[in-house]
Each structure stands twice: as structure tokens, then as C-alpha cells.
Image (cartoon, rainbow, N blue to C red; front, side):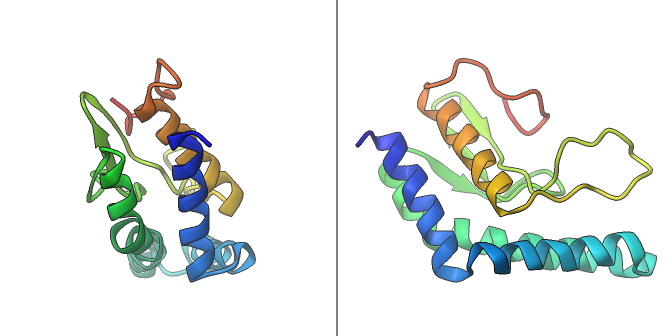
Length: 140
């Protein structure tokens, strides 16, 4: 098993240790409901609560395995970024939303499988398995 595959498995296992995939998807559905039908003053609360659930796994369960692989973990710098992962001159942030196509619309939250795919893409980029990051501002 490659280091990349090991990190991908640890990322999946850490998230499933906290919640099942269905529970993560239900959390996203509740956040989406608040963002699309809730009062304006609840939007930021919904975003922060949803983000905190994901960011706490990165901070509390994945920071050590990532560090062991030479990947530094720090807080995200984007509104929907889970964490900033950095190695060498490469950096990326797994995002909880799909790329924004309509700034006036509510963000389109990713489901559990999509977030795991986003982590895989980020880790692949950091490991050098891919030579160019996805076209999002969260990757450098």
C-alpha cells in the first residue's frame, strides 16, 4: 500500500469513526436547509456548525497522521475549507461546497462521498501524484 493510499484510508476511517456516511450526509442536509430556507442571521451559524464538524476531524484525528507524512495541517482560509494542508510548496484545502457558479444562490454542499473525493484529490496533489491542482482558489 502506498503512503497516499494509506492517508486516504486514514482520512475515511477517521471520519467514519465520528459519524456514519449517512450521518455526515444528514448534517449536510440540515445545513443546506438552514442556508436555503432559514433566516439570514442563521446562515453563518449553519455554515460554522457544519464546518466545525468537519474541521474538528482534520484537527483532532488527522493532524498527526498527516504530519507523519510531511503534511502540515492548519486552519482553512476559505469560508468552506476544512483545513489547509501543506507540503513543500504545495497547498490545498478540501472544500465542503461545489465550486460557486452563481454567487447569489445558496452554496451547493458536497455529500460525504464528494468530500472524501475532494480529500483524495487534495492528497494526490500534495503527494505529487497529480501535477496540477483542481481549478479552485483553495489550491496553490
